[in-house]
Image 1 (tube, rainbow, N blue to C red):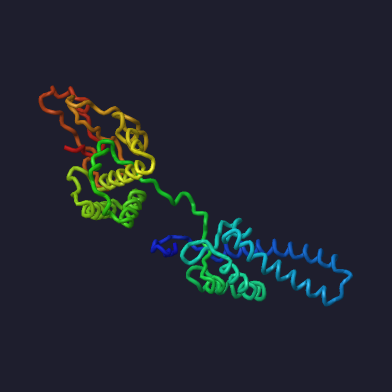
Image 2 (cartoon, rainbow, N blue to C red):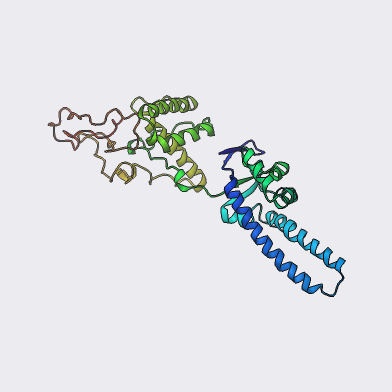
Length: 328
């Protein structure tokens, strides 16, 4: 990935295009340009048969310049960096700050491209692209541009697992305004990749991230909530607030985890009704399974029957706990 900084000091992570994809895009563009040039040349020769040799030579040079030099410049300018070959390969030319290119960028790229691509058969462009850390040719360096990939594999995008139902709404009073965007990004990356981490490494990362979030919010992490579940609940609360801000007060409420006394089908298995208060269980049902491998210390523990209810009156009596310990 290549980090570009915009005019507003926002870092953009873009994937630079490498030599194979760029070479394929250039070959496609050159094939289209050569076919167009042959057609235009035949038409010019047929139309100027009555002219003298000097006029025909001048028109031939003008056709070459307009088709093989002016054509790519016009296409990149009008399409904001996407020629036919780049569209086929999923590439785009952007400025160094990630913005769309303008006519002057396309003009510099096109004029220098005549020398490093057409006159040297692409040898200079290939050598410059191999030497550059971001795969740029000489025209990109002088124009201040970069060719990036627009198509990113969908499998790279992870999904943040939802928090357990008994944590729904518990952190609604937290002040999340002081948490920076970089810390939110680190938390999301951890939650989407924690299943791929070593358990000890994942536990250490979760504790460190939870401590950082708690320092920013001014409220400590509850002792009865494992750090991964705390991070998931805080991220869910932030997403709910953004949804309410964007779509109104009714968004993000009534349909989240824990709504209607049932937990959704997903990372925690099928929906199970929550036991009523006073029936031997606690108000929040313990998830049967969770998406959090780090911080789960109560898996497989035997839950004793509550005292004074006959030992078997509660729905959870005599049944081994298979999830996290519910809050006290």
